Image: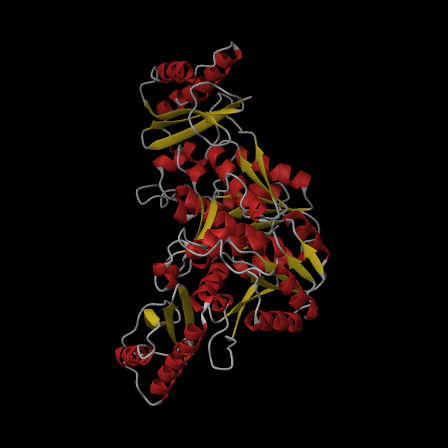
Length: 277
Length: 277
């Protein structure tokens, strides 16, 4: 496994790779969700490149860029075990040199949900992923369904800009009690962690209601809300039932429909979703 | 010479090209300025791709998109003569399908000069050129110095986004009296055309003043203005003496310095520049 820390060297090593290249962009502090992407990339492609880059431009001024959890040694050991070919860890100063001035935006798709709460977040994501795509030139790039809006936005970017790659979205990996894996779960205190299981339970409830014939989105939202409110440590930020194509809120479930929500425990925003299809 | 009218076919044909690819993006209605780019691309590369695409997203609502001059038959004959390998003419509806939502912006560099007069213009330019670069995957892309700000903005985009290509800028080609070649020169009535020579004369004056030791930018701007005002049909839109790096206006010429101006004749904006070095 090669660990590469400059953009030029990554470009040189990329040029030497024959066959297809699977790419898994991450912010590090890897968990089983990331590893499921790496394993699938390994199956699909001749070589796998994983990037570890905590991207400053996708964090708001009051967000957790400085505190975002990092453990490069552990990450590298996990990636080595999966026979990752290249780990790319570009420095921030080389990625955004002084006078950096170019931004890639997906517009309408980034207005609701996470985009409404975190202005500028997706502009940072699309810009850095565009740069990483140009550097790594993957055949396929892999993202987790847990960040559903991010996956939709990046696929939209790739299609709209006529990129020569496929954006692959893989299922959310969950802890045994159902909590979606996230690097930020480490922030949770034990009592918060215990109550956080209500998020996936609320999604299961949405699934069951829909399976039983309920298509009134307001009824589903209300029942999810009531379930979550039984856990006093969680504060609902949003519960959304939206078109998977436009992310516009729906009054009536019209599959495929994205049910997504954010519940805040302490200072930690926990995001999860399912698709009703 | 292959003429290709779909994005997918262009991608397929690109994949078959061995060696280096020179790319000249144009809006058609070709003149000697374009042809100088094509010839240089031919010298530098194994193959040359020229695109002809009048890009709607770089025209403002009150600009001349519908009236922009077009003559595909003549363009193709000129390109055939230069042994162009591929002419790519994507349809607008395939380039910007319904729901198109992704935009590439260079920010600070597009605020002054043309960007100030034509809001949104450069966003359209950088977006379409980004798309064309992804489709054509050139080794080098060629632009004319006449659109100095455009060339700087596109180079900035390519560097900032870590693209795998070089942006090459070639000298402005002029008519025998000095008028910079432009597809829009065809709009000029005979009397306007005659007086329009004052634009390149004003740039020559700036050059001479600077060569004689004048570094006060206001003095140079004022003398250019006085010269141009001797031609009653021309209306000065701006005269700029700016840093070639930031495009910020200068009080003192500090080479390399971009002297650029727009003079309007009737409804036709004529743009020209020189670099003092």
